Image (cartoon, rainbow, N blue to C red; front, side, top):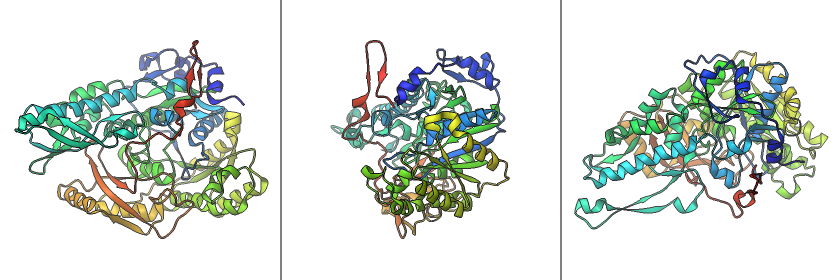
Length: 553
């Protein structure tokens, strides 16, 4: 079979103006980036479509194909005659050159131009990185110029859109020391990957340019000598930062291999940020279509939880159906099967791994009170007995499961799934949340751990306990909570697969994101700057003299 990049490059793309016309977008509402990409600039939005959220089980080394299913589902809906639009996240260069690869789908369910989307695209992530680092430069310049705000502790970190282990812990030697009467001023710092930065979160939660500027102004850059927060607005740089983001805030329009409209915009990670594409992109898709298909990062304990508990609250939206993606191979890995033996029938491992899927079904149905469909990515090695075991377990849990062939057949392979999702979308439902915003910070974290992860509770480091007390004293305790933890397990231990029991989650740090408007609880050993593997994907990517790319996936 052809590789993803070969399939994408062999596809005949339609002019982006033709794709826009499917959604009723006129040329005056488009800003063209060549023939096949454009920014959308709607003067007014009116979100009205049915909304489908695609999530997954806890990811494994086998891969589940959440974005691939999202694309195949949308193409399947289009083949059934529905007016549909995708709303996906932009890829980060960190995973593209690291372990995971790109985020444009796979096989015959891709968004294109695939290489552009996975690489520089329309420059949004570069603009976010620049705006972020402008604030960092201004902070240190302010300190150098006499530190009129008496900044004592700097919280805001530099970022870059690349996995770089060496930047997890650095020493800054700032010349400001001479202004303070000492020889040097040093502090320990750390870079974040751009997808984990507060600027990325702000861009994805802002409803318009004015809201973007307001949120940037509310970024907490640090504390002064009296323990008061210092905000970006006090440095008078929020206007310049918003200016850098004036184009990045506009959603990007591309297409699937089958010509289905796709809005690809914003890319926060779900294990260390809120993991959803931008509110503006979702609003735009929901304004222009009858069905909007969106996805949230990693498993339903991370991306879907943050989509439902944070994004839905901020944006005033809710999904009409939630799709949980899994594969037989991934479930067998959760059940203890060796990666090298996944092609062999193993009902014992499969049945041991299915509880991971069942927990996510339980959460969507019983906690959030939303209809759910399970999308099983079919592999040629899936046996009849294994397929029956999954179908039976899902039926007993009250969820319909559909085996899809979108990777090999595109929209044709997603039509059965599309029909099931459309049926579920017709059922009335009202979103419930995992926690009450008015509860204390610790209680909200506890609720997510016990209700969504299935844990016994939470333990906090002394530093985290003190920060919670300080935040609640300062009156910001009523914000949503974002738990940053490993994506591989329902717990904070990546080795505890399937559905672990009798565990507690350790919260080592609390971070207040004043601009984004949420509080981050850092759990376990999660790091805000990922690293490269022993053989990063970058080693397999190449380009020839004619500009033909190989190895990108």
